[in-house]
Length: 364
Image 1 (spheres, rainbow, N blue to C red):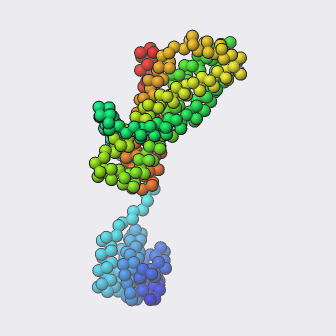
Image 2 (tube, rainbow, N blue to C red):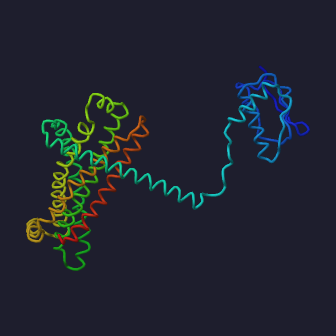
Image 3 (tube, rainbow, N blue to C red):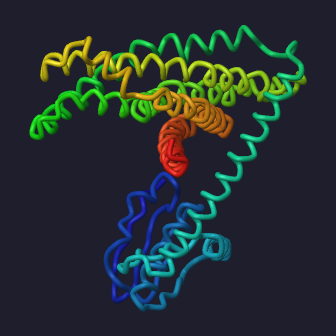
C-alpha cells in the first residue's frame, strides 16, 4: 500500500499512490487552485478516495473553477459519480445574522410548542382529577400505603427546611419593617406587617416554592427513571393504570400535606418575627400576641390556606407530567427535571397573583 501524493503541476492536480481509507487522511486538499485533477497515477481506489476527490472538486468549484477529472478508470469514474450524487453539500456559513422572518418563525414555533404543552398538561390534569374522583367512589382501590409513604416524603421530611425558611423570613420582615417604621414612630405596626405578609402571602407561597423544588423534582426523577427502565410500559402490560398507581398517590399526598406545611411555616414565621421585634423594637411577646389577636382577622390565615390545595395540585401535576415525558436517556431526565421545577414555580407564582387579584376584588 503506497501512501498517496498530490502535486500541483501546470494548473493540474496530479495524484499518485493508493487512495484508500487508511492513507487518504494524509492528503492536503486545502491549498492551491487548478483546472483539472489527474488520477492516472492512482493505483488503488475506494470510497474514502472518492470522497477526497469530490471534496477537492467542490473546493475548486466554490472558487469559481470548473475542474475536469482525467485519467480515471471506468470503475473510479462510476464511484466518484455515485459519491457526488449522494454526498451532501456543505454550505458556507452565512455572515449575516438571522433575519426578521427567521426570528418570527422561531417565535411562532415556540408559541405553538408552548400551546401544545399547555394543552397536554390540561389533558393530563383532567385525567388525574377523573382518576382521583374514581378512587373516591371506589375507596377499595386507593393505595393507602403509597399515600402515607408520599405524605412522609413530601410533608414530614420537609418540616425542618420549611420551618427554618419561614423563621428567617419572619426575622427579615421584622428587621426591615422596624428600620422603616421607626422613622414614623409606628414600631408597633410591625406586628401587622409580619402577620399579614406571612399569613396571606409569604408563608404558603415560599412553602410551595420549596416543595416544588424538593418534591416536584423528586416526582419527575422517580417517574422518569421508571419510564427509562420501561417499568411503566410493563405496568400497562399487566393492566395497571400508571396514573392510578403512580400519579394519584403523589398528588393526594401533596394536597393533604401542603396546608399542614403552610400552617407550620406561618407559625415559624410569626415566631421569628416576634423574636426580632422583641430584640430590635422592644415589642414584648405578650404585646406581640395581643396585637396579633386583636388586629389580625382569621381570614388572613384562611386566604393563605385556601391557596394551598391549588398550589399542591399544580406542583403534583407538573412534576408527574414531566416525568411521563422522559425518553430513554439520562439527558432527557435531567432536562425535564429542571423544566419541572421551573414550570412549577412559575405557575405557582402566577396562580398566587391571580388569587391576590381575586381576593382584592372580593375585598377579603
